[in-house]
Image (cartoon, rainbow, N blue to C red):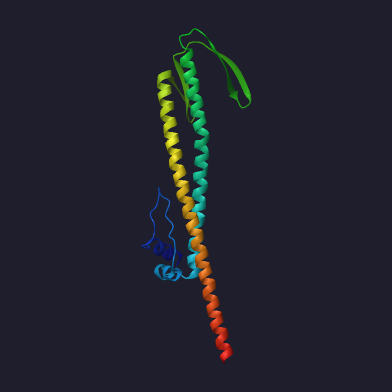
Length: 197
């Protein structure tokens, strides 16, 4: 029954579009029509909507984690670009660059960097490659642009997701309130019939 309810409600003609795999929520203006179109009773509809709301919350947690990762990654890339630019500026001057670098968490070492034509970049998964300063700058610039573009898309996805959460919460409230109203009408009708007898 639950599988049939899920499939019939997702095939509804009023279902809004999705964004990058996030299904759009359907705003319900007339609860009675919604229930008859989906073939659900109130409890099944509320269960389906609560399940959809939990799915949205799960996706939101994943997107927020990705956003945090990107927001941490962008300053690191910018810092690397600054270091490469500093190395390029010092190149050819004959002046050595003194730098402190982190060997391990909380452990730093001082290095004297002479004229150098290349830098080593961590690519991830314990992989480091040596690049010329120009190649490193171009690679880091491309990575920075990609990270910023991904962050913009992620922010738009989060906004879309928040809209869907709001629509779903409003729909849950509307269905619940409609059910309470219908019960009161039935209760009033039953009590007035009992008084007339």
